[in-house]
Image 1 (cartoon, one colour):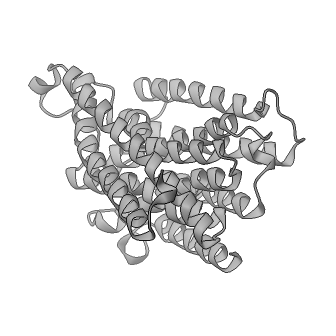
Image 2 (cartoon, rainbow, N blue to C red):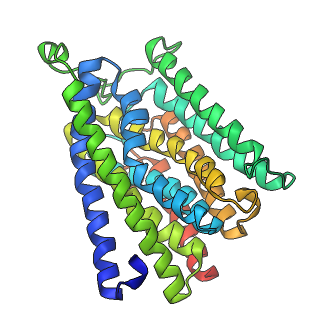
Image 3 (cartoon, rainbow, N blue to C red):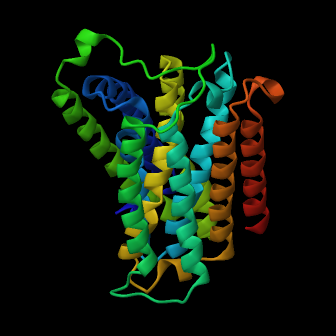
Length: 343
């Protein structure tokens, strides 16, 4: 359907879909914060699972649709490129939180655990790519392992939040998870959840439009799939994470902001699972190129630096932000330069 559109209307469709995703994500962030208070689940866990998963739906639709159409590189780079971009958004948010380094203020065991889980999940595709090219019913065994690891990790993250075995040292700049008004906490969250699901559905639909227009850019202009996937569709479908992070920081929900990014990234690893299922020409991991692997390594490196920052908890570093934010900006900028020059 979109193949018949002129370039102008194709750009309009791409822009409108991206805008709807951003607007829906703003509302979803506010609802997630209230849902966290009313259900007593906690900002870090709601941000990591509910908000992170909802704002990632547009991205997963992009990866699955292009994988089903046989473009493995596009599907893979959209997933891992989005993880790198979303981690960068925490560094951007750090520049806006003037009181102290964001990673210092948002100390939370559940966020640290999710960082560890993300590193494990990102390591599994590396093992698949380096291992034998096998697929059963068109699915690589690592995809199954990745899905199981994600499900187990989410459950363990909940237990870390409920019964932490350690707690961060509180300082004057530490922002704890404040449940808000005690009277409001007893109100039902059912209606809010319904609205939240509707917003997630809208973002998923827009993800399909973004994926189809992205493939048209590849076809019409002869662009590399890894370039469009990692720097165009990945960034656009990741904009909800940028918006939700900035909105959460402005609302003072710092743990929600950090948890939303890390949780969104862990959910984004499932893009590879769903894409491997949708890709019918064998193992997805053995159909991608070195540029895609480079973005995967970038996501791993940025996550490791972020986790180090969460442990270090530097109050203030270069440019009044944490040293980890400076490093993450540098790593991402290098990856963009490598992708553009290589293309």
